Length: 162
Image (cartoon, rainbow, N blue to C red):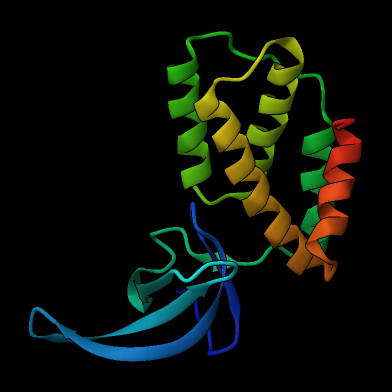
């Protein structure tokens, strides 16, 4: 079972990095449960996550420095087959990957969308998805590497020659 304490940073799928601002006990259906109070960084969203359920819903710690190298190599990999299915089917597929909360899946979505963008214009939904996935990745990498978000953004821009 995952154990977080107040002040820890954690990642919640599709919302990104947050900070544990409290641990509360609440009664639900006649039983007392502990909840992590997770304040998502960069917006005013606060999520209550049952501590006994945190791992099952995909909440996890921020990636370790050693995993950053793998993320960056996913971004740099151009030997990928882009499925040229309809944009809405591709959108659903990519959204499922983002919802896993896996930083590696998010990096793959970003890479695939940038590769696709070189081939054709992205739909409005795909552009928004790219922005969201990129924002999730930038925030987590900046915390993992202890660098400012703009540095991480520039690094990603260099990878994709933006």
